[in-house]
Amino acid sequence: MHLWRFSLGQHDARAADFFDFLSPDERARARCFLFAENRRHYVIGRGWLRVLLGRYLDMAPARLEFRYGARGKPYLLPPASTAPVCFNLAHTESLALVAVTRDQAVGVDVERVRPVADAEAVAARYFSPREQHELRVLPPGARAETFLRLWTGKEACMKAVGCGLDESLREVEILRADGGVERRVSVAVATDRLVHCWLAELRFAEDHIGVVATVCDGMVDEVAGQSG
Image (cartoon, rainbow, N blue to C red; front, top):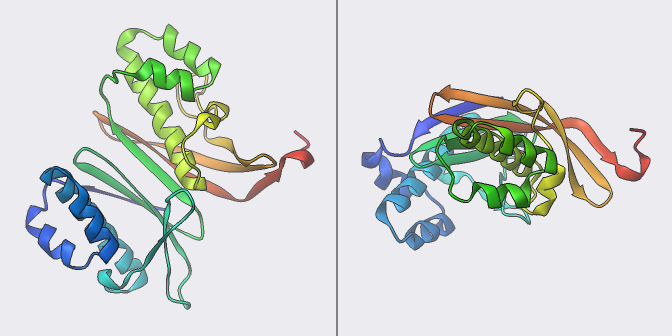
């Protein structure tokens, strides 16, 4: 796995160049942003993504073709002679991360550590009862970081397996007893299927946290056939 970090706010001079090699649907989406800063961040993020993936595939960025899964997760249509490149992009404000793997579904999420106004309501909907309890008993100053650690972990898992965010996140319990994130969790992608994900926390700056998740090779179980 390769992880790339870049700023969305330091490449304004390249935004016009990046816009030129975006696809028609990407250009249309860029034009839909109400605020110029959000539009610029989107163009720069997609532009650097194309540059990075183009280097892996030895292709011009403009030639890359993206398709989207049922839940909106993008994937590449590579040349027939090239092993599939899997990737995921995440950003928070002006910082972006790209995770790249070969033949292994991946998801990544990143957040700046900050108070979250609706954290209690979000936790009640998406966190397990134990996770909610552990959050409540933490000192107030430690709750924001733990909340965001849990949220980024769950988001990364859902992005890795290509599922949308819903109440099933309550079943994906990732909080360890020591307050960290579990290294391996199971995600229900259907009523009879579990997919196992490997997680790793990312601490690349004091004020940002992130989690990257990959689907473990061969780790798909039929629920009815599990032995425990």
